[in-house]
Length: 49
Image 1 (cartoon, helix red, strand yellow):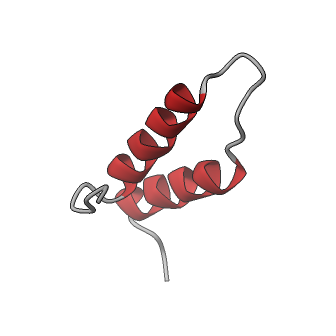
Image 2 (cartoon, rainbow, N blue to C red; image 1 turned 180 degrees about the horizontal axis):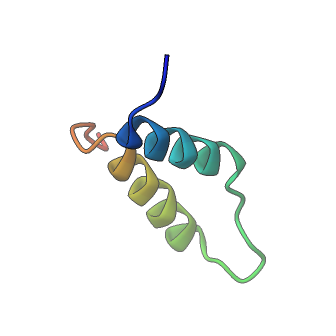
């Protein structure tokens, strides 16, 4: 089965999310913001509650 471009994009974003690490100069707030941004891009219907 071939992946559609949106499936492919999500796969890439999921891999980025799995490998994402906080950098030395990144605050916890910035790190959390980047994680939630990636999650929103993968599935915008997920709430952060």
